[in-house]
Image 1 (tube, one colour):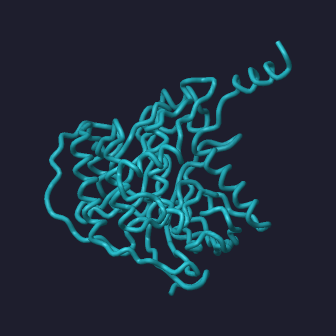
Image 2 (tube, one colour; image 1 turned 90 degrees about the vertical axis):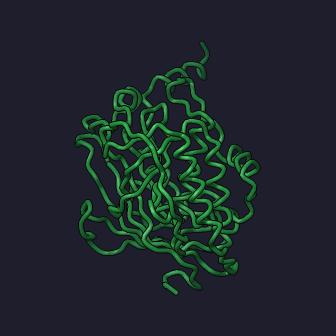
Length: 334
């Protein structure tokens, strides 16, 4: 066996980091690459794109049969019900006018998120964050991030920590999720889904249990786009129509975002033991935020060691949009 083969076998034998740990490490790396000032680490997702301009109300009920999930007890194994919610969310989005911001403007968003943090020597504990971010519409100029830790669901702790987000590179996580890049995506659901498969390909490793299918990767990418980016309403509508084509989607009849708002959620369960959810207002079908749930603790703990002791059905991370608008300069609200 040559040295490269030995090194590869040793690497593959090591336990993989959990998705939550990967997100935190990625955000820290992106922050260091954009600014010399430290970025306070957070968990969960940056919520930049849920219906801050408001969505037109839709009427009607979604009739489904629920089974007990151990977490709010409302996981619905009914793909038609999930499709119906996505149809209504798309209809609501199509009723909104695309704002067509100028290239020199910024997208402002305020959000709250939270998730479990873990590390050597201590058990997983919940951490919350309140965030304000200004991202350039064209993705070419510096953005601005302000955030401060919150005491769980309670008040903020300490002052705001400010970080300049260096550009180019899209959003704070380095993805091409600035408004201009997203606005170039197709509004045809089939073409958009093909573009999403190119952006978020299947993930393979030496351990098949740690692989992610193309559908899992795309759904994760869609969750990020809805919860991390400001989407033109016409693109949001197409995105919800594309989500309908992902096999295995289900409906969660009662899900809660980081702001404590209840809604229905379109979800997908991952082989690694988590369930990702996109949460919608049950009346207007506006997207509220996102949530990740420990759906199969046994499967998860076989792969990752950071959430041992967290009961099955517990929320691992969640996010909620509070407000968003187009502004002229970073640091301003108008």
